Length: 87
Image 1 (cartoon, rainbow, N blue to C red):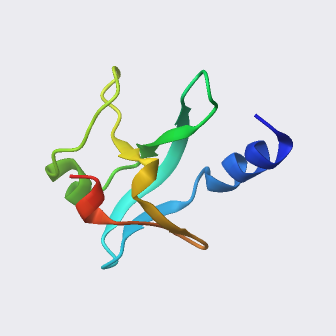
Image 2: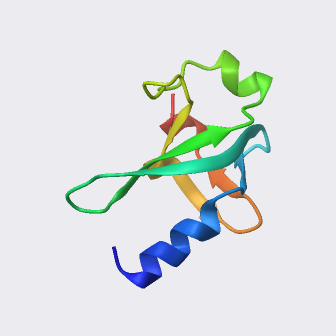
């Protein structure tokens, strides 16, 4: 991964993840990449909200909640995801 990719990745860590309608999902705890290409494929949530835990989202082997990076539609003060793209 190039330096730009690394700095962008670090920028995502700890940010709050919300839906377009403002529902809070939790915070970005880690990032999951495709090993071969270096493509970012999932955000791993930390401190998931009750709302998020009620959704049937994908989990990692340790039970962490995964948000597909393809659902991210904006990155600013918050990471905004399209809820319809993660269910």
